[in-house]
Image 1 (cartoon, rainbow over the protein chains, first blue to last red):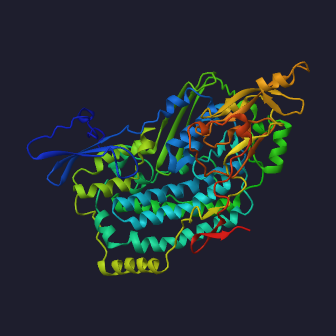
Image 2 (cartoon, rainbow over the protein chains, first blue to last red):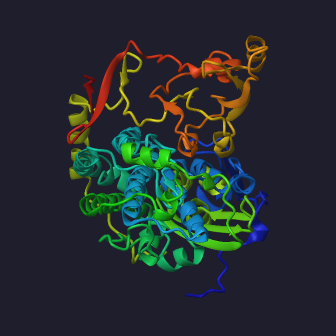
Length: 405
Length: 184
């Protein structure tokens, strides 16, 4: 691999002047028909794309600024709202970083419940991506199917946490609610339903000649290129790189869970669709293992539980609901810094948290997978036709609010 | 990109036939997951996070919920404890208990529904577990002012807007994903 090769020239950003007589510049967006607001500037030579620039920031929500001016516990709903299809992972990444500073270790049952919620969330996130990919290619059938099939899994999350999307399930020291009665049976029939549905997806969509014609050999990024661009998540694995944060630095219960990291060879748009389906299959396998092997015990660390008052302890025994000790309100961790990495649905979330002994974080920094995959996007469409752009954009599973933060 | 690594497309006839057959299968026997709302509505689990109120007698006015509220939806309003144990507005308490023992000053939370995100952090931080939850979630208000109830209005839970509809329970189903069964 030649590391000196130019990946992306920053001086070209912002210039929208066409170069030469043949070239025109197309502005696609920012009122985007897809997953959110962003603008794609495409330099065209006839029907061929010569350069692409992504103009982002239309849905910037100042999550870092807001979190640095609030108590530590209040950042949980803020980070969730940035990654709406993928809330559990954002929540988990932040709490992992905070737990390292507070020096709290959750008990094994809480670790398993975290992994359980994360995997259910990964399935919903991938179905969301597949659905949007479908509508980008003009197939409203798959759009409706994927969003419909997301519903049983969201229903599972609702049963577990009491909310459909913005669960706020994970807190420092453990999780907030115990697994309710009847959850295992409900989860098992939902998983079986999803496994049966793969046949329909294959016949209707994945092995459909129309889809193959539009996606195979389109938007190819080979292994070295993907590594150099710093791509993360399923997009990286679609290019043949065997990298998954769940294996590379295991968090939650992934140490004890047996699963494979699926990987494709060609790195084209079609592979980026297949990898998501393979990952859903792996998630189903993980959920089955968790439901079988989940250990008994508390769902909150003893150091947190011991700080609860008698009323709160009684509530925990009766309702299996973890209440917050008063120190969650006035957390003042000593000066320290920590990082956390979590494999979210779209790739790796990186969290950096620095405390200064104050009641607010001194620095709150996170990099979301969509932001990293943006580099990929400016590179991958070059040389293909304009008609391939929706397929390429859809396959990357880019979620603008997640990148803008 | 050289042609060496390119993959070949599969045949057209079989794939198209399979897609058409699957489409036809779902044309004849569609799998609808949507609910005929508001004719039918879901009976939600007891742990569903909906509108909530506070138990006036349990609350001790400690302001922990106001401090923990992430969107700053909770405001503490001054009240006085009457002889019956319930709280009264400051003005009213002063007139009723004039000459009697000095009314004990306290505070009570009121939620601005326009700001609340239903994270239930207030439930979990409350040292006396004074909040009361409900399943009601599908409610909007006609006026902006209605989103900010007074304490008396806040104590009464809003009425379920789909009370008269047929209540169903979503059940997972191996064939259909979700099946709605009539609630008992």
